[in-house]
Image (cartoon, rainbow, N blue to C red):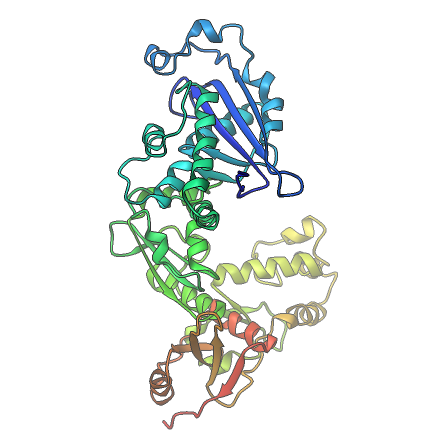
Length: 475
Ligand SMILES: [Zn+2]
C-alpha cells in the first residue's frame, strides 16, 4: 500500500538534548526521517534517514545520560552543531517539520541555527496535537502511549533516529486506521490552529468565528488589556499566539490573558469604527498606537498671515469643521503634521507657531525654511504657500443634507450592519430595522472623533458601500 502524504515532503525530527530550555541547553543528537512524495504523486514515497550525535560542548547531566543513554563519552569527538548545520538544513529543506511536542524540537533547532547565524523556519506539525485531535477520548498522548495504542514498532526508544522513525510509523498507522481525508482534515486543523496560552481552554479558538469583528483580551481585571480588529477573528486572534514569531506585546499578552471577548461585524468598516470607539472609551493597557484620550481637533487658518490655530473638535459643531484642516487625533499630531509640511514645502517653523525663540527658526538653521523668519520671504507669501500646502488636508463639507445609512453586508455570514453617520460623526450601528428606526428618531449627540471621521471620508470617497440618505429628525 502507498501511504498518502499530506505534504510534498515531511521531515520527522527528534532531538536529544542536555536539558529542556532551548536558550540554555544544547543538542546531543539529531535524528531525521525525511519522506518525499513520489514525483508523479502515485508511486511510493522516498524515505531517507539521517542521524548524528552532536558534541554539546558541555557535560550532560547524569539524569539525562540515564534517560537517553547518550553519555559524555559518546559525544566526545562527535561533530559540533555548527559542523552539521548545513547538512541538517538540507534534510529539512522545504519539508513540513513533524515532531512529538514539536514546539520543543523546533525551538531547539531554531536557536541552534540562530547561534550559527542561520535563519530557519518551517511549517510545523505537532504529533501530540494531531493525536489529541484524532483521538480526543484517549487520556494520554505521550510517545509511549501512542506506540501502545497503535502497536507501533519501536526499537531504539529515546534515541533521536529511533523516535523519529516512530513518528513516521505513527503517520502510516493513521492512514491504515482512518480515511485519508480525515487524517488530512485533522492535520490541516492542527497546523492552522496555534497553541493558545495554557490558561485558556485548548478549544477556545473554535468558538471564535472566521468573520470580521472586534476582539478584546482581558486579564483578571474588568478593563481589557487589548482591543483589536480583524478581517478574520479566529485567524487574527490565533496569530497573537503563533509559535513562530511573537512580538514583545504578544508575549506579555499571553501571560496576562485570561478571557477573550469578541463582537462579529459584517465587514471591515464596522470593525474599524468599533475598534476606534472602544479603544478611546476603555483605554486598554497594551493599545499603544490607538491609546489616547478623545481630544480630536482641527487646524484653522485665518485670512491674514498668522500661524494655524488648533481647535478642539468638541468646541465646535461638527458641521462647522468643514473647510478647516485635519482632522487630527490631538494637538501633538497636528504639530507633527505641520512639521512634516514644513519639511516638504520649505515653510518656517516660527511662522507656523512651532517655535518662539528669537532669530532664525530651526528649519532655517538646517536650510529647510525658505526664510520667512529672517525677512527673505514676506509674511503674505508664506501664508499663501501655507494655505496651498494645507489644501490637501481640508475637511470636505458633509456631502449629504442630513444623516446617511452606510450599509455593509457579508455574503459569507449573511450579517448586515447599517452604520449611521452625519457630519463626519458616527451615530451608531444598527443590526436590524428596529435599531435603525431608533437611531433615526432619536440620534445620539454627534461626537467628533478624528479616526472615525477619516474612516468615513475614505469610505464615502471610495463609494464601495451602499449609502442611503435618512430623514433628519425634527428638532
Ligand atoms: Zn524660518
